[in-house]
Picture 1 (tube, rainbow, N blue to C red):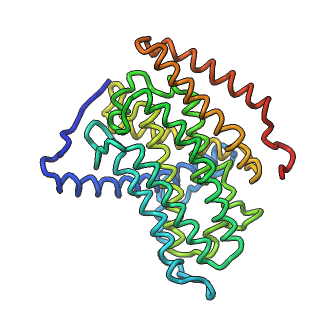
Picture 2: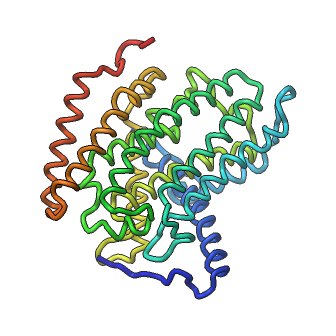
Picture 3: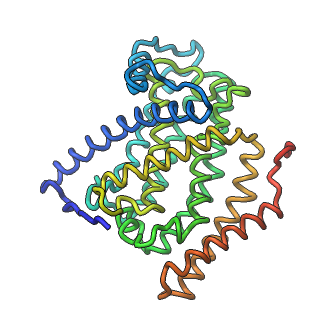
Length: 362
């Protein structure tokens, strides 16, 4: 494994360290935003047997830049009866927390803005703030579709935050640390193998929290037109678009750090391993969006409270029992055991609790 580590205060000065990594984070998020937009549209085109963007540059690689130029030239329209101040502030309140998440995400050993000893707690706290911006947008637009879309987002975050956090606690028990960098260093065996059920619960819950398919009910065009941002145009709409893909990038980076060994890997440079794993996780998101139909709102809530929440509690109990009962056993011995437990629990729970597929639950 490549374990190149930078000094904590690289390049030797506290303020220079913060300035350099602040710029790196902003550039990284903006570049990956454009890459993700292009990748999703091209990949979905291939999966659906149609053409993706292919006019602006070779293979349409300049299409995100063309879209960015277009939104900058669009007129900024505010509803006449809306709250103009809140309408203007909402995109900023939504986008800033997304950028702040990357402050504790390690790109390689030592390549991190702030290695907080409560890194996971910081991410859980700061990621929920973006929801406030979404609710502000729905409220300030003075539009019933916007408000309903925003309320769905709040309901999803409140419901899915619990199983998501509980699934992360299993990782914390294995490492004994809340530091993102220490979690990566502890993964001699990637935690996706030691915590397969925790990974599945985290990934599904995260998709619901960030409004990704098949849980994109906050923007269900057949029900709510465009959802909470229907009254936004120009750069303010572009900021919400940035939030959507920024959150997808953040979840991909967090999954990479918690379950895929972060920057660790053979032969390739550490930062390149990190990017490859992040791209792979996002590709899975695109794959799911292309193949899985959108669920109903009652199914969304039932999945959180009837399925993910109890399974996350069971996963936490099982992890604690394994640590106490077999503290010195090889992790590779636990890999097949945990996969078997995951399969049995999912099959049993899906039999015991119906999630409303095919009928509307009241």
